[in-house]
Image (cartoon, rainbow, N blue to C red; front, side):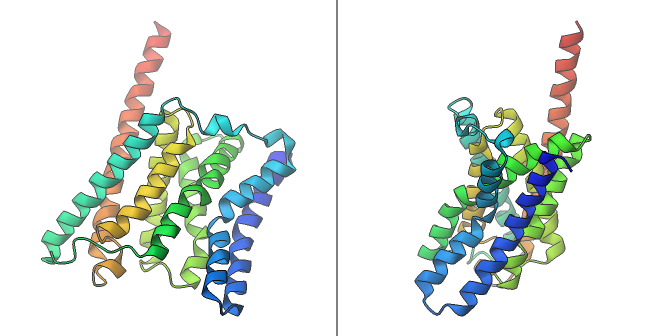
Length: 258
């Protein structure tokens, strides 16, 4: 087995087993504040795992300045924010028209949720888009399926949240969303020259807006319709980006041949 493959296995092992350990510890702790700290470690497993891999495999060590650059920074922040806001607000408006429920358009965000949302900025994307996707791109010939594989692993990683009943949507729907969002994040990374801020901004805005406009069932009296509507709109955005990206690539190839 190559060093790259070994590093990938190490990443998966740490990412998946660290949350399980944290869940077990939380079950034995009665102090909510201490338990919340372990919950934070649980949430940060992907980034912690990436740091472990970078520390163990010298060949994979990265310059963090490469992932966090001033180049394309405006696009890396504004485009994800725009995509998430347009998709989620539109989804909430459409679902409100379908259900006739307008009173719960806006959700509420507790202080605990704010901490979790802000923590998620750094807790995951160093692992998913900072390490895992580039690692798979080196090992897999067909690059087009890589974001889908990342989305699948990303979904499976959330098993510990399902154990804790923190995710209220069906697994199949959640998986579909993870794969779609993985393709969107992959596109954002590509057009910003692998600026990780783009994926972090998307992840942050997603976690924020899903509560702010009551997409999550717990924020809208248990209705799954806003989440389904959001997923459909995200799929539409994904296909638009794929078509646009394909046209841009073809145009670039034609220019190179001239």
